[in-house]
Length: 336
Ligand code: UT7
Image (cartoon, rainbow, N blue to C red):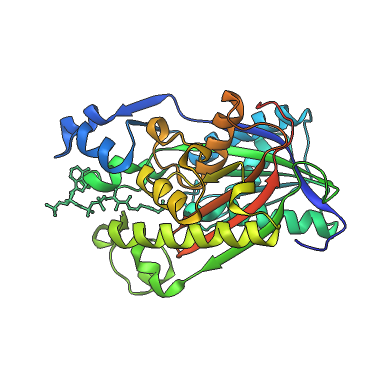
């Protein structure tokens, strides 16, 4: 993204969570867990989950609609949906989301990078805008992990929630507020088994394993993932900041994927930026996977914690393993 004479500029922001709320106490009625354990180990108090019949695409449409409204427009040249819980394995969710937003005919595709999905989607979309292939785009992060969690797994059920968030990007000047700069992306496929849904893809299907015996639930090795999340997000944020010439004291806000409040604190320590500069909404939404970063952006922008002119780095980490960061000076905008 460096050196381009055109940049992708954030010009709209919207978010949406489904209505049903599940508190820690409600989880503790059905699982061997407690509000005390979940709060102290993760910082989460409640999460939103979809109702039967609702889907990731439904949430994506709501968030996309609000981002368009925030940008003061009804149209975009491109719709990109970051998700690991698509409405169906095939086709992608984005074309239907685009049509439901009244955008039939535009380019539309999904990006799968689990909790880093939103950062990856921003990166690929920004490159398309910089190349001139698109002038405007809607980038939506949407996931409904409640649909793939093992109902008896107290650890994953305590963490994940459903939601969607979206930004509207337009072509602009690399020097203007809102311009995405300093993109950094990384991955380590040798550790793919740390976060996975083992079944449902070609590898499981080619074995002929009956569907009812397949490992269709999401699994995560929490401790290893925790350590990797801290290490990779801290390094990625630092890479982005350095590429922009920002010292740690120059960074006003670091907006990270909301995986665990203790991960935010550990990253703050590593990058030497006070934890007060890390906006967080994990207490009330949990880990919403690809929706996490735009949801916390929307909350922080609405509360005034995120203000125009602040130097901001966004950072994500997730399955793959994948990680990534991007920087911007926060633009003046009203959340849709
Ligand atoms: O979003 C993508 C990336 N994901 C992440 O970054 C998640 C990273 N990992 C984490 O946030 C944490 O590892 C978890 C929150 C998942 C788990 O916390 P932990 O402090 O690492 O716990 P643990 O897995 O080491 O388990 C400690 C104990 C175990 O019991 P024993 O074996 O010591 O008796 C678990 O069975 O805590 C138990 N435990 C629970 N107890 C009550 C695990 N989940 C729960 C629970 N309620 N919900």
